Length: 285
Image 1 (spheres, rainbow, N blue to C red):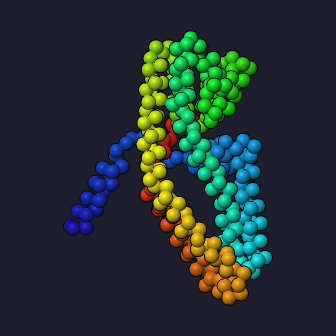
Image 2 (cartoon, rainbow, N blue to C red):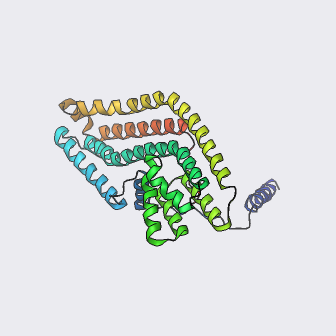
Image 3 (cartoon, rainbow, N blue to C red):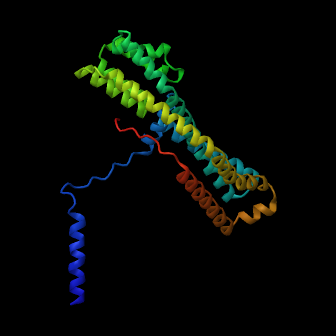
């Protein structure tokens, strides 16, 4: 009897949990490695390299570093470890470049929005006001608006050029500005200036707060990076000694290196996860 009651209770709980929605839940489609590499290159504003070339370059860097360390240390586990680090180095450089570019753009957007509002109030059309940002706007944002101006001169299709501008900016704030201009163009927007000025004020407040938090946590992040890199630098310096090579050129040494690498990655990931500031995500892609 108790078993029957338990089965009935479990079936009831299952039906309650699965009856929350009558629509099948769709799993998010996983992006390919090349697509993610291309998005990273776009965020870092590296347009001369494709996603496939980035992957190939990372593999080449890993192989070259592995061969160099193997020639110096004659220890395969040590060479594989530093080959892995070299393969991840281009991605780390691009991520840092993307973060710096995103911060510079975030700081430049309030001025750009103010210039856009001034242009609209001065009687310029929306295409003219956007094109003017390519000449008189903040330096960090001029290239996309210059490309918008050239695109609009060539085609004259404002909505299509706005789509290209949003994809070129690849920025959450840029998405909001582009959509506000699209609505103002299609249905009329007498409150466009008010919306843009409010957006500029919010961006300034957010940038001020984020700058204070980043300044306070920068020393902690730098200390964590030094603590992560220090053991591996010491290992590389000791790799030329025969005693160190013999200790790691074995199955037990490979296990120690693997555990050390996993521990270092986990500790660094936890530090970044705990101290990470919330990033504004793009919702209009």
